[in-house]
Image 1 (cartoon, one colour):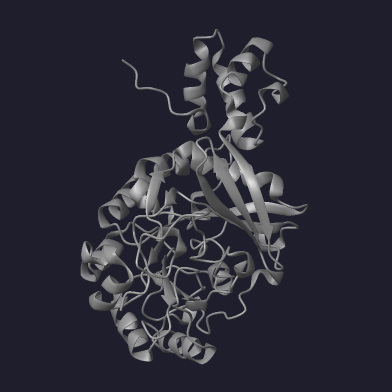
Image 2: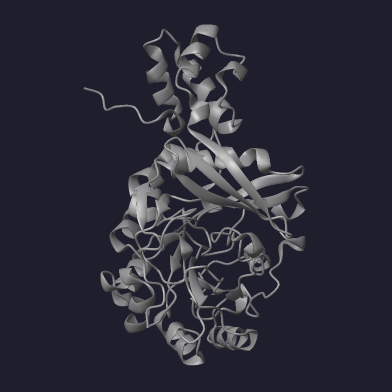
Amino acid sequence: MAPPLPPPLARTPDEWSAALHVHGARGFHGRQVFRWLQLRGVVDADAMTDLPKDIRANVKALELDKTFAVADVHRAADATRKLLVRLHDGATVETVLIPGVAAGRSELPSPVSLRETAHNRPRDVDAKANEKENEDADAAAADDDDEGGAADSPYVRVTQCISTQVGCAMGCIFCASGVAGLKRQLGADEIIAQILGGRPYLESGERLRNVVLMGMGEPLHNYEATARALRLMMHPEGIALSARRITVSTSGLVPEIARLGKDFGGNIGLAISLHAADDETRSRLMPINKKYPLAVLMNALRAYPLPRRRRITIEYTLVAGRNDDVAEARKLAKLLRGIPVKVNLIPMNPIEASSLGPPDAARVLAFQKILCDAGYSCFIRRRRGDEVAAACGQLALVGAKPKVRVNRS
């Protein structure tokens, strides 16, 4: 017996063809439906004008327009847009559209260029990779090699941050997504729905360039749906993103990191939410460290099959009084030695459920200097959309009651 078909928005062209075949459709009709949905973002079957009427009727019966709806939009002064997406069962997730900044540069770039990175640079680096080094740290993490022409593009490049779970089970103390715990997993169709739902909110002259799975939830805790969604994003007849334009962020689920590397050949960008350089501190900040301590995680990063000129992104949220001392920076430099990485420093964005906050600018810069002096490319992430709670760590379940204690000492 053939396995059941996935939900409509999670289907490949072949799966659409199989689903429609029983209604008398020909093989190419499945590809047409797929392109309407994934390439054009059209979920209204009546608008699929190149399909026969009977096929349109069968697609309309699936009620694709009830899969998701954008229930609310918050726009920040910097043009960041946070979308509240309501799913078929009433559950909600948040996704964020982040437009590129002028000249694509970070306000606080790394003083260390790629060619100057002595300890952690890949063997093959070219001038293009060196030029990319100072790009905004909000963009996709896997940007060390580019397809070319992006710098001359007339379009504003947009990064979309998408969610993979309703809530989160990881319980990191600086992140609003896990405060209420995990409510349920998202299906691949609901992950893709965020991209389709975000498309009408791209402004004139904007193009979706990068997708980062850094929203609500732990992507690798929902591996099957995440992997299918990744394949759909990359399908050449659909959204057609390059693998290097997609980044998966994880708190450190070691078996799934290995699985991601094997399934996608290391081509999907990998970002690690690290946030501490010793097990005691990291276990207080991130309970997952008790299951996969730093030594195990670092071995997983060394084994990840990175293509040439690519690096793993290390995300490090600076929490005042917890992990922001220069001694911590020195420990971090030692911990990462020999692994091809770049470091994004994220001064903690405030969340409603916690009294924790970021260190002052002097401590942030001192932390960055230690890493740069050790030969690492290190960026300080700009705040984007924080006045509408769209910044890193601020996406949350609307109206949920806290279940996680967020001020662990």
